[in-house]
Image 1 (cartoon, rainbow, N blue to C red):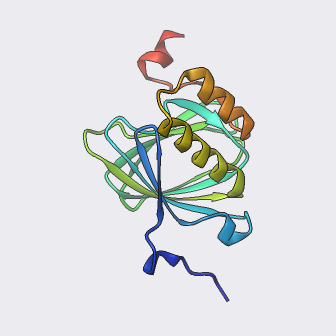
Image 2: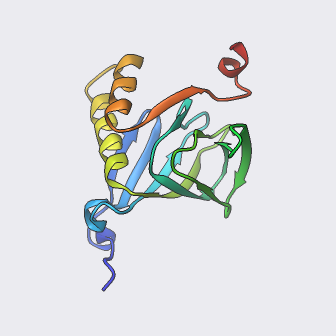
Length: 164
């Protein structure tokens, strides 16, 4: 029998990662590590600030607003994929990518990660680190590395991406 979220009886857990808010209606514990489902709210300018890669693949469904998904293709070139409410984008595991809200309004997405356990541990650890006080870049890089996330460089087309 499929497991249902406890959302009807309990609110989903809220985690803040930077300025991005995540609600976890289905945790990796509920799926024996195979999936993590997250409702994500990215404020204007929100999203991971750099290109990164990790083993879990992702499915993004934009629920409200607009997101720009930057995704490395098979040849190593990065494509910008504009995504509006209703759009679904698959991000294969191991590909450099990032998701940015380049609009002036908040955007919401429903995201599924597979497998989900290690990426959930990263989100929880990053949220706890941020809640403890100011966080340095080296702290974030070390945390990401411990959880199998590799930062690969700036987002193409941004001021940081044009500087190099």
